[in-house]
Amino acid sequence: MRHLIVCMLLMSFYSYGFSDPGEVDEDGGHYDQKTGEYHYHIKPDEPSDLTSVQSQAIADAQRDALQVDNNIWIAAGVFGGIFGIGAAMIVKPTVPPMALIGKPPEYITFYTHAYQASVKDGQVKAATAGCLGGTAVSIMCLLVLQQQGYGYY
Image 1 (cartoon, rainbow, N blue to C red):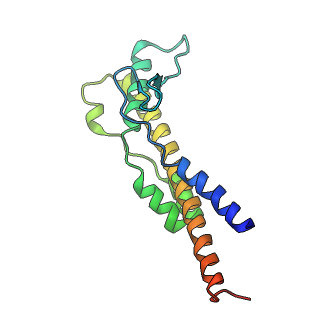
Image 2: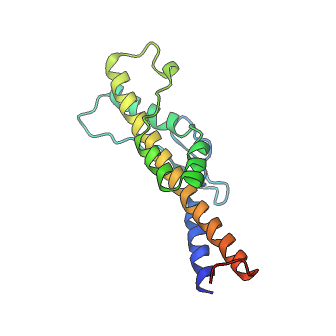
């Protein structure tokens, strides 16, 4: 029974990594399909010393970072465990060059930093979810094998 509770807890953390923010509109939000309420996913930090170019670069980078597919990082977490999480922390995301064409240097600098930070955060979360999910599945498989008489005594 104790093992079942541990597995259920691990699976609840695993499902957290698969939460989908949904498509966002030009304001950085969307309507929740369950409640019908509008909510934001992108709220750029806008201290008073940021210019409109800097604020726009940060908002664009955070919006674009939501479109990155992190399935490879989930797989890295499942199959690599803690090493997959470490890789997600080390690998530097590549900024999409099309997002920078015709932009001023100040925009490029802020966009690059915000994009890489947002994507790296997603990579680490996805790898962690994969690691937890892979661990939960492994534990469940071991429990089943043990109940079938194949476990170590």
